[in-house]
Length: 125
Image (cartoon, rainbow, N blue to C red; front, side, top):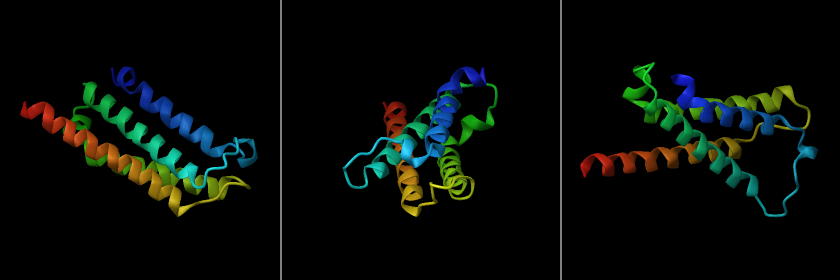
């Protein structure tokens, strides 16, 4: 049951990891300044959303259903920092960037706020 509802978040984490460890030269070049920060923001917004949805729908681990917003936000931060550290220490052409961590964290935070607001509207009505 857990895997059924969390397949999108697990798949999205794998997608982020694979894209993050591709050699920089293999990625398409875009001439818009700092566009990669927007991509980080969107990727982690989606990661938070997929994970939140999966944790709320599953019934195997009740602890995951009780206070998932902040827990998922911290998990997204840890995942993002882990990816950045991996880029620094496991690759030769990718490096740790604080702005990437900030963009990841911001994307997950905005998703957390959006879900929090939507839940309040759902349960107030």
